[in-house]
Image (cartoon, rainbow, N blue to C red; front, side, top):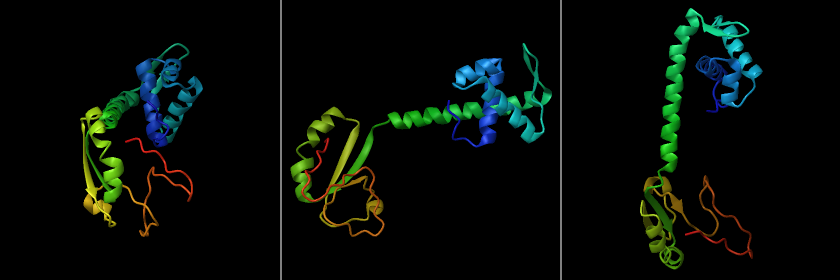
Length: 178
């Protein structure tokens, strides 16, 4: 589990939990894909920042202090919560199904989208496509539109283009994967 985007305190708390669960700084570092020194420094910085001693360290063993034991329960709960969030994110990322609302000018939709739609839906039955043939500009958020295909100059002051294609006049049109 990567913790590089977590606040330093949470990242260091997770390092502490990893060390305790692994039984050593070296094993925790190996599992996390980092160095023993980095793992040791993270725990030491956490202890210093909070004025705690979490571990009794010797050259051959680690033991939790009373404070470390209390914090370990909270740390394990945090790790379990993060694991549930990661699992949920994975489920969302794998869930390709649902409805996709597309709006396009009628002539484009008839010529380019509709002929390819049956084959696409056979390959991806978990996706439901709703196509709106509209030549006018819509309020995409109000209409619940996921994909809008338009040509010509943008009249929107605050248009957002995600993905999309940009081309200069005279260059070939991009091939759509539909």
